[in-house]
Amino acid sequence: MPDAKFRRQSPVGPYLADFLSFSHRLIVEVDGGQHAEQSEYDTKRTAFLKTNGYRVVRFWNDDILSNCVGVLNVVASHLMDDGTE
Image (cartoon, rainbow, N blue to C red; front, side):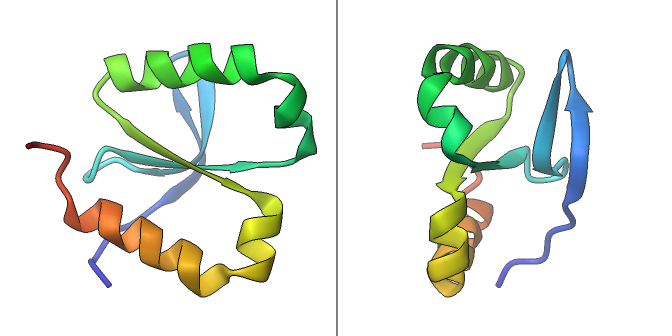
């Protein structure tokens, strides 16, 4: 697992990132059921975060609870990928 520190509920502009690794410019968002009804807001928010140099990965609460190892593997893969191609 790559070395990374995450801050919880960190401000990024007008938004709060659920989990932010500033050194990796990675934001992990944990979405509950309310996000199914606010996809327009989430799309705008993600666009703002990406425009400001962050990569955003989203998981549903259920995914984290039922497949924690899989979620951690996805986060690790994003940490190893610096976002450049």
